[in-house]
Image 1 (tube, helix red, strand yellow):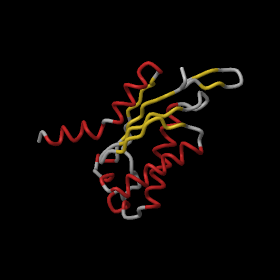
Image 2: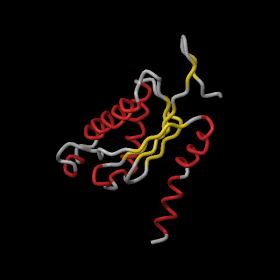
Image 3: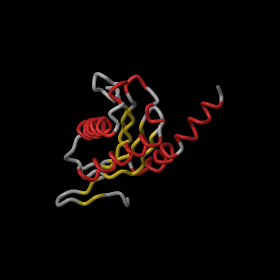
Image 4: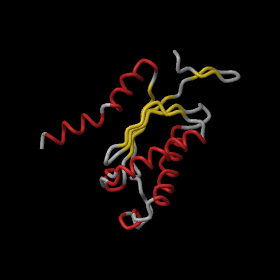
Length: 142
């Protein structure tokens, strides 16, 4: 109940778990500087667009975010802002990425998203938080 937001005529909670990956699922986020820059960029976008990040996990080949948005913003618009602006900013900060993504598309067109309610929010946050452990376990099995 503590995530409910009161508007002038409404009370709401619009939380989503969104996941997307770089084009061709390259491990371009392996570099610490790339991960740190992407995290800063995503936080800046959310602050500007009045979205609130609940959890964020940047893996070498994909991104997980649990984010709260206003009901006036569609999930598609939120995803478009996160992917579009972060792509633009990553190309600006790391011009060498243009060598790998010469067509100018940093992110794959695909994405995963689902709404997250209060009941399963903690479980989803735990899943996102433990992504690194899950992937380390899978990698060590090879």
